[in-house]
Image (tube, rainbow, N blue to C red; front, side, top):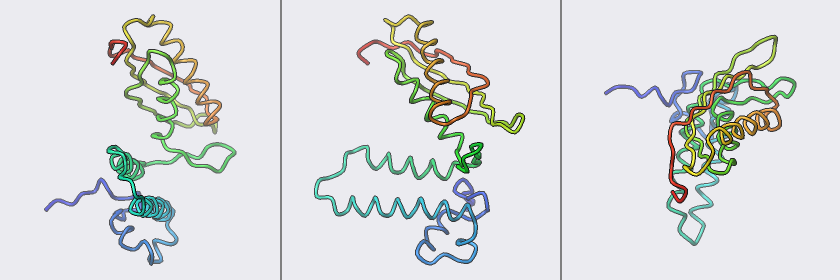
Length: 179
């Protein structure tokens, strides 16, 4: 049987191993930053699912998929970047989520794929982003793309504190207004 390494943390430990030792972590589990972050996320997950068990009404159909997406997303966060001057770490995935949310705020635009590349230039984080969107057929595409650019740039600067060095917006689909 092949070993599934997609769930391994950066330190090499399997997420399942951290889960099994959740209440009684090993010395490595207590001192490793990767295991500690994973354990904190898993504790929150255990608490959230415990609340769901106690909830009298059945959860929404998409709740389980949202919880699992959050768990998988946390495991996929391979590299974290320190936000300059804050002591806060952020992942490329979190940055992409902020950019997609900003694009989704533009009327007639739906954000799709967002690829973020982070580099360090002159001791500052530099972001290069490729964002694909779908635009409603009744929208003026150039105006929509301009608004996406403005909102994405503002969101990165105001919500994350990082300036975009490059933003490429690709309109990959046109959709009907009621879809």
